[in-house]
Figure (cartoon, rainbow, N blue to C red):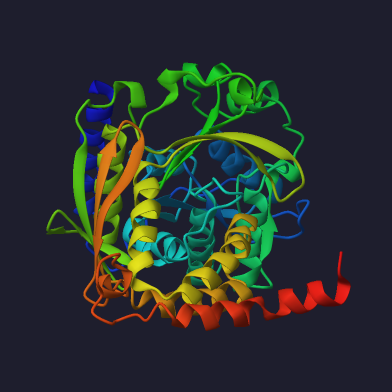
Amino acid sequence: MNKLSCSARSSVAHRRSTASKTTKAVARVTHRNTARSSVKARAGPSGDVKKVVLAYSGGLDTSIILKWLQDTYGCEVVTFTADLGQGEELEPARAKAQQMGVKEIFIDDLREEFVRDYVFPMFRANAVYEGKYLLGTSIARPLISKRQIEIAKMVGADAVCHGATGKGNDQVRFELGYYGLKPDVKVIAPWREWDLNSRTKLLAYADANGIPVAQSKRQDAPYSTDANLLHISYEGNALEDPWVEYSEDMFTRSVSPENAPDTPTYIEVEFEKGDPVAINGKRYSPAEMLTELNRLGGENGIGRLDIVESRFVGMKSRGVYETPGGTILLEIRRALETVCLDRGEMHYKDEMMPRYAELIYNGFWFSPEREMMQSAIDLCSQNVTGTVRAKLYKGNVMVVGRKADNSLYNDRLSTFEDDGGAYDQKDAAGFIKLQALRLRTLKTARGE
């Protein structure tokens, strides 16, 4: 519990520190440096590029990419760092970019937009990929792509760049977003262009170009991670053998179910038009809501997942995930739908869901078919207003109550006691005979 508490305190401190810096409509920090790059424009593998917007974390890989862009293309590089609730301090990214001569630096707090416009709409669909995965990484990519393109238009850049490898799904997700929003944009994907195809070569390039490398980065990490407010993922290296169990000390957002409290935690979550708005009577903004659900889930060992998934590029991949708040949200939201939605609405949503989830997983957030599905999903979500009571206990989310003013549950119809004539059981005979008509006809005509 100590590790979890420290993480929670760190997350709160991070929110408070960035809040004061992001009071404008869009939290954009632009730094203009008088330093001038010594490189001259030249054609690289993707052609002539004058100015490129780089999705920049400040980590080793994207710092190397920044320098490589300057060396290879001789272009001006604009860095963009998104705060999606990953829980990391972002100021070091600015400092590193400044040291490398970057003149325009964007650091955007996108947490509220991320949850409000991407996470919550996805959860209205109850989207789950291959029966398990809650799409925590997939749903973040469209927003990053959108903001990169917005910045490119703002600063007059003719190219964008990401740090995804040529083996994974993220290269597809980023680039489908780019092209869907700006068809003529140039895309630079260094991992598909350069010859820095080993950790030894990357470190040698960093050392040769004066890029600081922490001692911990000089050793192979046991796994790679990707985090945002919805989840954190772990994959690669020590996790590549799907038969080998993960290490318990890997997790940062949850205690193990075995170490969770011995007494259950009860919560009541209120929904309005399909989205959660309050917990135990206290209202939250979308990002605050997910943060609080993460805390409650993490403290009770909820949301861990170890799966092998089918990547869009064709291979199988093992991933371990922590999605405490999302796991709670999916369970309780479906419970409310059972009393708020008609059978036809629910069943049709369930038919659409696998295709909807696949579109998000594969990177087609901006596709017309996803938007068509979203319109239908949002329409029926207008009726999903009410309250769900749940018990959180040692990795489990157990719904123990649900209510809604417009509930379709009618106890007079459902009761096993005297219903006062609300339902005539004799009507069932004709209903069954009509349903059986084609079966009886088929059997009569075909015999055995």
